Image (tube, rainbow, N blue to C red; front, side):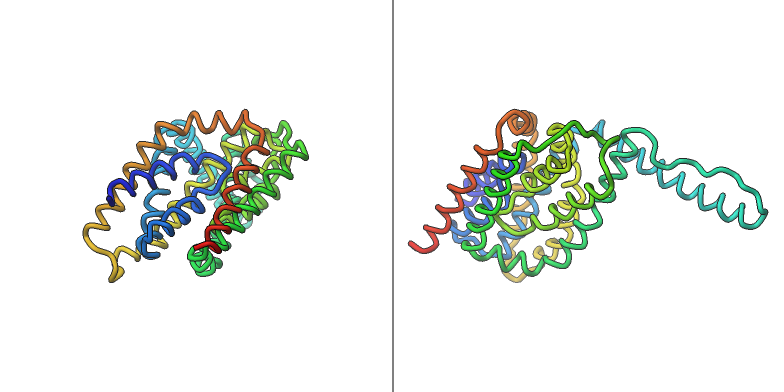
Length: 292
């Protein structure tokens, strides 16, 4: 039965990770009704997210490689400018500094780096509270309702624009990073919240989706290292460890199969339909909590 459960969780993770509905909330609800222990559930959740992150890296490897190279280039230029500053101070020369952020890819990489700052701060500071909220179906249900409201407001407001990386501002990247940090709470869709924030800042839907998908990678990898301690928990057996690795592989394969289709679906579908779904799931979770 554990294999069937893991296949179910991996499919749920792969499908919901790339839709503006909370994958973490869905996993938490299913784990609650399956009676899974919280320590094991947290580890499996992080492994499932790691699997879909691997799918993103594989499918978008060319774009990510270019962004990584540009980030390294910015770092080297920054070091070069520092050396020039020291040289100018010592000699009294006025040698010109290199411009660090040039071109769309460098601007994109810089925006991602800026967004990581509030995400990391919020993720670390609210982790313990998020774990407590994850154990409560009431919090999960409320999270789904909050996601639905945000999606509906964004849709009815006809938010979005034509901004790409060149036109995007640093403060908008900071706000989107804050939204990603808040999505550690179950039921609140990470992709939904960040894409809605990007659309409200005037980003095009295509760039908003790509930005949200890429900015999730450091957050997911960081979350995995915060949960890795559960491998040593007393409740963790060798079988559960292998099951977690198996779940990660399943999520990665499933993610590779569905990610392109899901991204296209989100680009073309009005958010009000995802809002209605989030409202329905939230109400069902809350009713089931009081009924059982």
